[in-house]
Image (cartoon, rainbow, N blue to C red; front, side, top):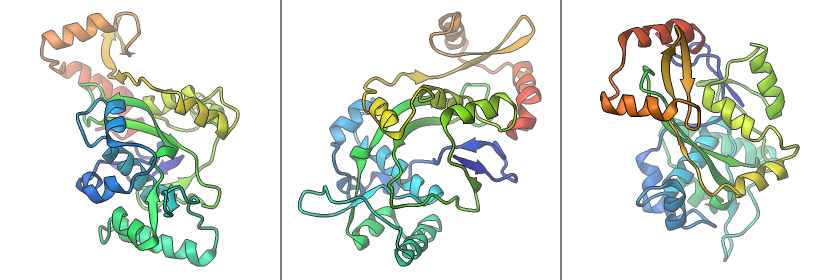
Length: 273
């Protein structure tokens, strides 16, 4: 997990997974063509989009490299099934760190890096497992897809020292315990995703679980007042469907009092003003 910079305007200091936005270059034919082990048709079906589903895998792999320095790619051979990238050699590590910085600064693209290094993207090593949309009450809203992959043994994760200030390898159960003890800040989707794999005792078990996820429901929480208290309802919770119907009927207009209460309760912790 990565800790966000304490000076960030949004969720400062929270522990998060590597991630970011889908860039136009992620949708390019060059980037899509670099993906191995998964077709665009399959990817699009899994995500519930018409086309360019593989762009989300490209974005996830790119952001993983930008934010943690881990590039899940294979050396190209005739079948595209070569060995995973190993950067344990100091010279190789330094070269890829330079490429990472160039990517972050916009001087290159992931496709150019892969072509220069003779790599393809191991899309078959990454699994789509979760989809969250922030509730209407949120001052900043995100439509976020979550993926799981195993870090290649020959690579070392390092935060970027910009958006993030610390790298922490932690077991899911321990991360949840720290959060419950108010030692760390985790966002609701992070808590939910960690909970999904909390029962796994090894990387192999996590990957086996992830590979078996074939249906990914969209989680759009609802924040409301109930007996004077702020309550978060998620799909499947009692009262969620009724609350969703009420919001849809009113055009999901934000109650100013609810918005102010949300900022008062969660704002200081999450950097919401």
